[in-house]
Image 1 (cartoon, helix red, strand yellow):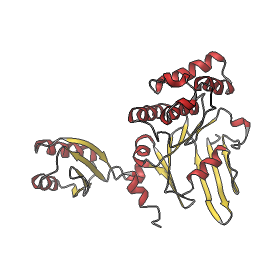
Image 2 (cartoon, helix red, strand yellow):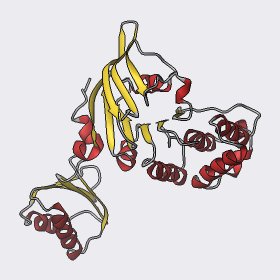
Image 3 (tube, one colour):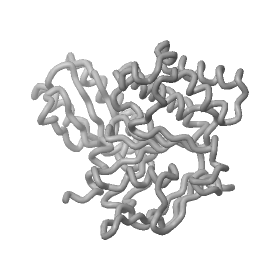
Image 4 (tube, one colour):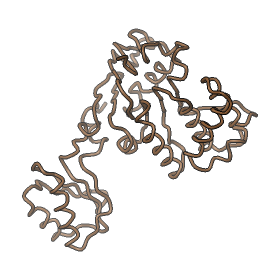
Length: 308
């Protein structure tokens, strides 16, 4: 079976600067995959090569057996740059219909596809206006529609929710979740909490090198700890009661937010232990407002990347 994406010994140099250094990566099936790294890690260069805008210095990229520049990838590869633009003075809706027609849809199919995607993203009556009259967030939402047109095998999204209000950002995340069983998504974002929320795995770059490509659950260590937010700061009585549970190895209060704490866990049945902890907290008169397992993705990432 041909891989959706196959990257082999990919390198890109700008003079004496190495932006990418022998990257090897394979994506076999549909999924939402995060692409993260500090500024200068090589994320933009990698996305530019995948989109066909740049050619590598050495190595190769194959998208369903084709190069990114091949016309055969039309309809298979869709891209949302961070600052996608539309042609001025032409209603964006007409442009979206044209993009859909260029993917081989007839007029009825194009209208139906565009209308359905607009509906997924909430109220989009502004689509009939020209792009120069729209806000950044409105243009961004319409760029999302463009990136999701047709039945792409691979969708590249660069900061897809940057500049969106919380409701619109949530609509975008819901749409990615819905479609990630049908298409592979590579999502570059500085919002690691968002990546952790919508992606099943993550690619981490550091100084042009691939330092991790693995499931988020493995990187963050899902069952090693329990992260809690309470309705008020925990008192000494609650802390002592928690430490009476044999499987709780340590209770670590959050120095910046007194309502938060992390419990280091041991034992095999984490689900049962979680219920026990929640019941104890309720018995002490507290309410759990947020709960998650494992250290955050940012912690797992910082364990791997260099400091300088």
